[in-house]
Amino acid sequence: MKLLIRNLARTTTDVTLRTIFESYGTVQSCTLVMDKQTGNSKGFGFVEMPKQGEAKAAMKMLNGKEIDGYKIRVKKSESKPDVESAS
Image (cartoon, rainbow, N blue to C red; front, side, top):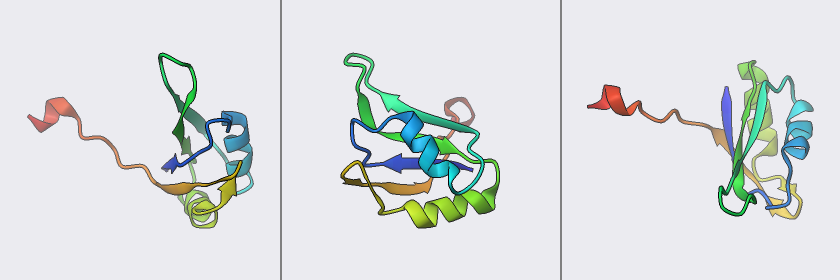
């Protein structure tokens, strides 16, 4: 299950994020979204956890948790509709 993590401190690293989520189970991938021009974090990212139960537990326990001074928001990432199939 792919999770969207919002309201991250610009100083939060993908290593920090991965470590926090790994306490709830296996993390398949962890990606922070970076600004192409500045190279700084945009304050959100994605964590993929292969086991749905672990992902749901992480989502429930971490939503609203304070990390690096910011209360993060965690929810299931919605897939973007495929542009070609939508037309």
